[in-house]
Amino acid sequence: MLATLAAASVAQQPDVFDACAKETDSTARLACFDREIAKRRATHPAPTPAATATPAPVTTMTATPAVTTAPAAAVTAPAPAPATAEAAASTATPAPARTASSDIGLDARQQRRERRQRGEPEPPPPAPIVARVVRVIPREPLISAFELDNGQIWEQSEAMKFSARPQEQITIRHGVLGAFFLKSADGAVVRAHRVK
Image (tube, rainbow, N blue to C red; front, side):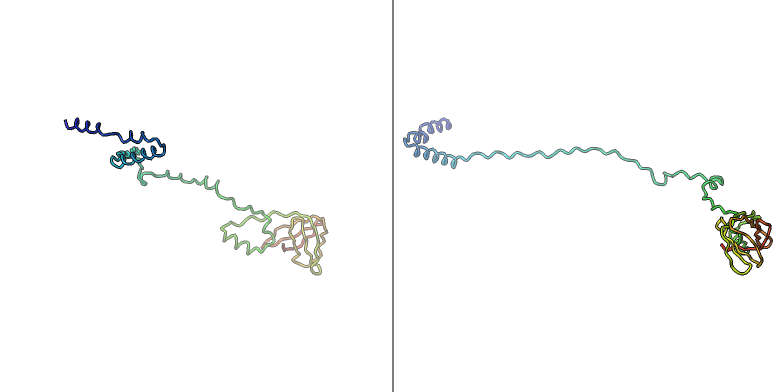
């Protein structure tokens, strides 16, 4: 019943917007509407919209598969195969080849000492060297040196007449006690030593 009485009282009150609408001046009419709207908003404020809660992001948990690692002690590398004597011999760096005439003319005692230090057996006597004379180098009276086409230079160890001309072939033979002998094409023989 109270609601009915309130509605009736409101209906009996004149509408302010009707009064504004009766204004003949457009500027006054517009000012009247603005004024009444401001009053209504001050009396009945507009409801504020409820704050909408932002849903929290949903995180998806992905299960990571467990990685099973074997203990370090359990993983063992295969042992290397034992090296055989044949494999070692095949992979060993070969020693530089030594020619039979590479030490000819050098001091025999020094050669024997070096061979003992290296553990090498005494080699057999070297084969004779056959070469041609490139140049004859006079040293002293009745003593000459002979440069050969193999790069070696031999000198007489005794004073005697020994004729060997350039381009002549000579033979060098090993003697006893480290001695060496030069033999010319005409059969002459002289004791000699190597200087280069």
